[in-house]
Picture 1 (cartoon, one colour):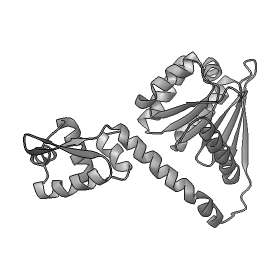
Picture 2 (tube, one colour; picture 1 turned 60 degrees about the horizontal axis):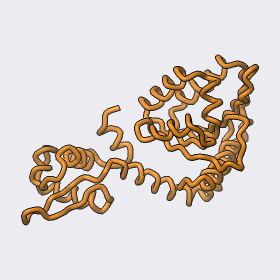
Picture 3 (cartoon, one colour; picture 1 turned 90 degrees about the horizontal axis):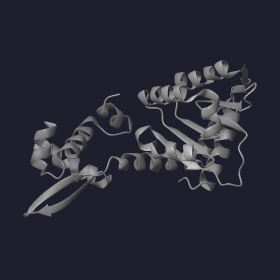
Picture 4 (cartoon, one colour; picture 1 turned 180 degrees about the vertical axis):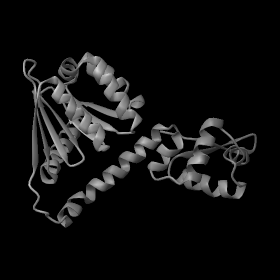
Length: 245
């Protein structure tokens, strides 16, 4: 996905996106230079810079009696996303109370063996929704294979699907966490007192629960809004215990 499209999906206007990317590429620059790079009128760019400054994406300093503007580290975009998510979580219970009960029964499907469990992973990609997961990364990697998981991560990244993972700390999990920034992921380590015996994926309005039994792994995919909500609440509680914001 193009950089501009990704940033605009975060809620920034095309002009704000153009100015931020121009400033990011130029480094410290005057508003005039940024306007030329973004191909926008100087007066318009001044207004946009002030707006981005208030949003924490640009800062100014004085150099040789000139006001120089610099774009903040792109990681600030992720911080902004988390802030918006936190605000939404505050009103989520009220929003849930407004939801009309359709009376639709949950859909439950069972999967046996590694190949069928990979169908669950394909469903996660096809749902095109951000993902929360609780799993043992080492055992999950051993079950599905390193090559398959690398392909899955690449496919998820191409679709700009973010994932949060809770996993026991290990050498492999630490290596995974080190790549978070380049793979649209946030990894947190579970407290050592919490033991994980299966994998749980929470996405769209579905919950996937997968046994890690190497002889006959089994997966259950449940599609139900209420069960999904309950699992989200449990995940958020464990996320906070693990140091997540």
